[in-house]
Image (cartoon, rainbow, N blue to C red; front, side):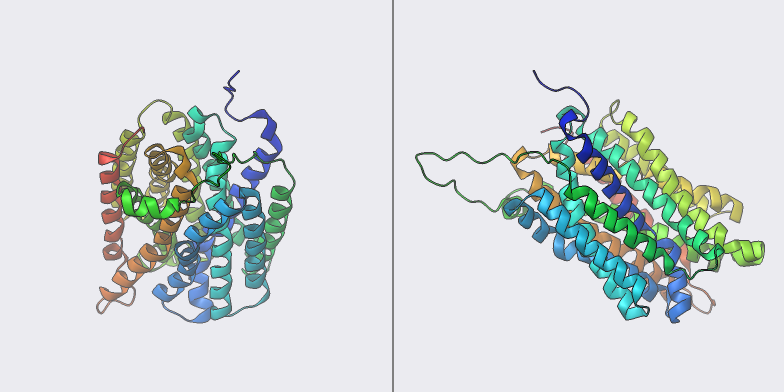
Amino acid sequence: MKNTTTIKNDFLPLLIAVAFAYFAFGAITNVAGAIIPKIREAYAVSASLSSFLAATFFIAYGLTSIPWGVFMEKSSKKTTLIISSIITTAGVLLFAAISGFVPNMAAMFLCGIGITGIQVALNPLVAEISDPAKYSRNLTAFMVVNGIGSYLAPQLVSVIKNQGYEWTMTYWVFTVIAIIMTIAIAIPKYPTASKPEINNGSKPESKNLTLELLTKNPLIYLYAVGIFLYVGVEVGVANTLGFYLQDKLNIEASLGEAAEVAKNTVISNYWGRLLVGRLIGSVILDKIPGRIAIMSYISLAAVSLYFATHGSINQALIAFPAIGFFISIMFPTIYSLATNSFPAQYSSAISGILCTAIIGGAAVGPLIAAIAEATQGSNPVPNWDMGLYVAYACYAYIFFVGLVAKDKK
């Protein structure tokens, strides 16, 4: 009898390990918004250069996603997860142990390599342990757990400072989390990989499915660019929040010593609203087509950005987190639309290609900062309003993806 449960019961321990992995890489990835202003202060670099340090994390996605996908095809998801978790642990440990702009950049890049492998393996693994009809909803639900990690990470920076420690102590905490993650994913039972049939005693033809997709199915580029710009604008706006509140709205003058906690709280609330949006979205996506959800939500994200940048500090404190809510369903929805547009055998290749597109996180944030600095003129601070026009352009393309995407195979 066909299993109709949301998660296949045989893989409950694996489910728990997968959930913790989503939590861990959410925290490690999205603490950047809280630490980038500190990097600018600690190492006396520009806003765009400090943003680029965080961007090296996402450059690793662009360089290693497809190699991770190929490696996973030749080995297994479990092996991929274990090795990539070890690399992630090494990255956060390096960041904690050695200070300096260049060592921190190297540590970020190493973390990015590890997190890339984790995400390349996790997304198709969710499909294997889920009821096929519930894949989109389950992927969204796991991204909720990812959002919990994203929400807590900036708050952790504030807690550590309030305890009298340096902000780099955050990465010692991440080291412990990464070690637990590595152990957790190494223990459970994994689904058995299906083997291709052999006819007449001959080996099956070996195909490079990634190359086949890239050369023969141009539709994959629609989704890849969508992921590129979505991740870019999600991370780019989050990493700009601290600068915007500090430079444009002068939050220190209004709140004094409470300003830093307030800035980190806004960043946390951005990721927190994203978390809530994914939780609600896991229900909404069962009710309406993904295309409609994308177009509706991304339009409201653009409206929220407008209100965030055209009002008082109090208005910005509400509107910036609202952006997080309205972009919440974009990654799992675009990912599932892409998966549903191609035959099942392409799942690993799709994962590698779309995770490569996460390099957008390296492009949009520094571009926002570069445009803000280039247009500041005689002003003492960058023109962040002008820089954030990049976000509107990203939202417009994502709307286009929803307009032309396919909902089913």
